[in-house]
Amino acid sequence: MRVLLSLATNLDWPLQQLDVKISFLNGDLEKEVYMDSPPGFDGRFGSKVCKLKKSLYGLKQSPRACFEKFTQFVKSQGYTQEQVDHTMFVRHSQDGKIIVLIVYVDDIILIGNDMLEMNRLNQSLLSEFEIKDLGSLRYFLEMDVARSKK
Image (tube, rainbow, N blue to C red; front, top):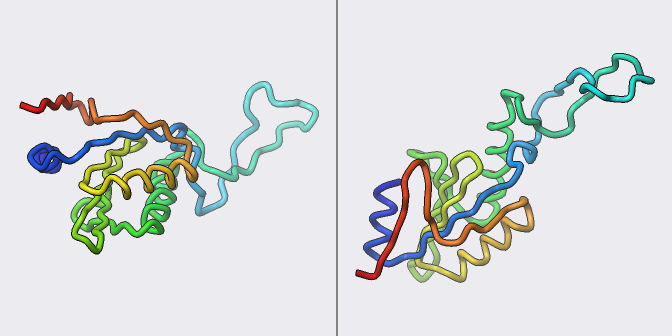
């Protein structure tokens, strides 16, 4: 991550930050999962259980299910998942431009020299997930990020 931040700084590339809201609720479960009825649930049905359709906070499968769904979507947008770091996705354009996407749980960083592609990807992500655009990168993985033109 520090190498990418250094590269972006030296090349004056934009650093954009996005936040995936309710990320763990986006994942599709691979196996059937059941849970006890939550407290306050209508007691007329007795002590029934619920079959989950999506991942849920607190399930050990939720982080993986969410990441798999996100990975499939980003790959469908023409990005390649890096083998050394599976949380990094890269897209090279025909004219030599590059976009790097890094995801950590529910935080996304976009780095690159193709603003049109960054905007297109941002809009695609917004159409698929509930995402908040946080603008320029300010804080990530316990690192404060500040840029100046000097």
